[in-house]
Amino acid sequence: ADAGPADALITDAAPAAAGGNDVLVELVGVNKHFGDLHVLKDINLSVTRQEVVVVLGPSGSGKSTLCRTINRLESIDSGTIRIDGQELPQEGRELARLRAEVGMVFQSFNLFANKTILDNVTLGPIKVRGVSKPEAEAEAHRLLQRVGVDSQANKFPAQLSGGQQQRVAIARALAMRPKVMLFDEPTSALDPEMVKEVLDVMAELAAEGMTMIIVTHEMGFARQAADRVVFMADGAIVEEAAPDEFFTSPRTERAQDFLSKLI
Ligand code: ADP
Ligand code: MG
Image 1 (cartoon, rainbow, N blue to C red):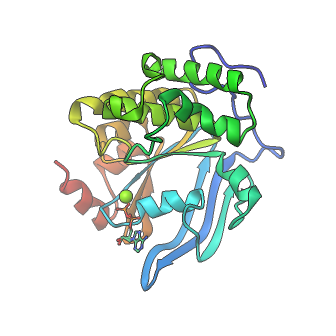
Image 2: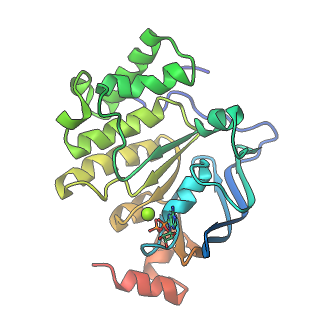
């Protein structure tokens, strides 16, 4: 593939799959229990290429579990999950390869504390994608520059602010050239003044056409960035709508109740 423009976060534009199927992430009839707790109830969700889906819902509704099942950090009890037409196996080498196609950014930054920022970003590409060290470092510097932290490349995570660490986490995920990015409350652990710098990077990614699934409590961002809002309650998707429609005229009582409790 051609290299993207030097100032882009995404290097490879994701080409449409053979057959022209535009669905990139597909969950069909997904169920998940934790013991007696039915935490995902018959989830059906299709995310198309370049779509930005924001997942909203009260605490405990299953949003994080949904994200974690999409790259098999959690197993599922029944149903199917496909990424770009390929079903995710439960385990094995093939799972590691397919998992690399799903970039994930968590609430806690999850950087390797004993590795430099640069090493955090190059480790995956070198180990999983087989990229040479010089090539991985060049790409890492480019990505770190794009998220505004390249001057910190030789420092360790603890020497950076939370906002900077989260931007490194985004660069690290992008270095794997994922087809889709999952964000699970990426700004919830940040001091308020650092929230915007992370949301700005996410908005830029969306504008470049990255397919994204985002769990967030930042309603202003959700309304602006989302192509679609998915609202979860008690482990089920109870409402899906365009953001303006969802925020101005939610159809279900659960969603109305959720929105009425926001500050
Ligand atoms: P959300 O992200 O929407 O707050 P979660 O997906 O974290 O919701 O959790 C959904 C439900 O599953 C909650 O009731 C939570 O307590 C429960 N849960 C999450 N992870 C586990 C686990 N590893 N073991 C048992 N219960 C869990
Ligand atoms: Mg959660």
